[in-house]
Image 1: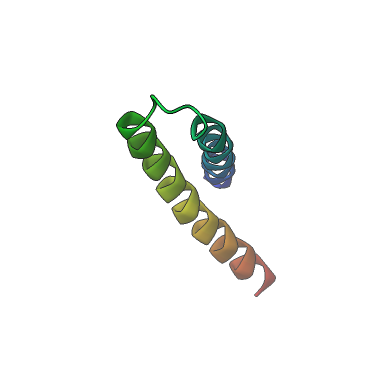
Image 2: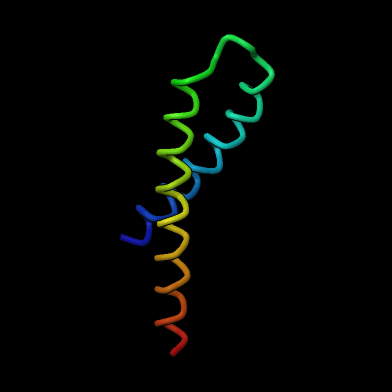
Length: 59
């Protein structure tokens, strides 16, 4: 499960970088925002779970 969370986190950061590059291209609008918000939301959720699982291991 933790590997999946890290994969989602990496996917979110990669999509974020691609979004930054795509923001310079004027023709890409709605599809880009939908995809980016989906992946970044998943990455944010994953980072919370990763933080929680690391905290549980230390405790």
